[in-house]
Image (cartoon, rainbow, N blue to C red; front, side, top):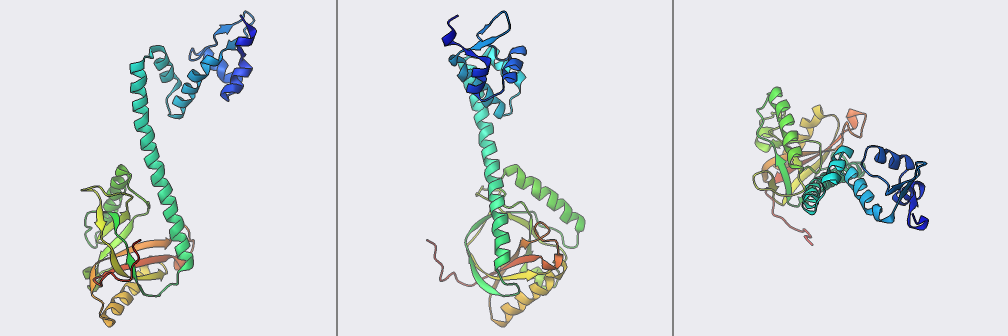
Length: 279
């Protein structure tokens, strides 16, 4: 054996960024062995083994068990290698999509919280809202608490399945006609924003001008603010659309005191789009 062509277990472990005991364990289970072992038990490796060890580390990071990795190495071939890579690529892309959704969720929570700290409560404005992909639940029967509970469960399961959710918290949609009857007991739909459009899955909410107000207080006091918006629209001859949306800036997630919850209420109007910079 030419000494200068081999690496000791310590040198090879350092090269691979692992502890020596990892190399010893892999040797014991027959996963990765040195090219040469002296009678005194000293193990020696070569630089040419580095790529194989890196592949083992890579497969581990993709949640492949040592047993499965060993099976692959014992049966490896170009065809099996390509098949393995294609399978792992699909899983990686799925994980990337999930992480992107989580990142967008975190950004949205931060954005909502910052908005809640900056805006004034109980002030009505007319604002432009760009088009937005949303996921809508099936209609909910009014006064049916059980129907609302089942809708929440089914809606969250459906959204998670398609990995479309930008913001995990589910929000309420009310028909303006329902509000006019003073029925605030149950939402008409559940909704959440989505990060892309898929035919038959998401709904594209068109760009629109909406009456906007920040309600401060617990959820039981929301009807007071809904009535305020309806009165404002009537007083100023503002033609209303079909739906009103809730968004939760301060909620149980970031505020201990329910009396300080901040709910953004957005009521559709039929006002023309104007003075909007779409660049």
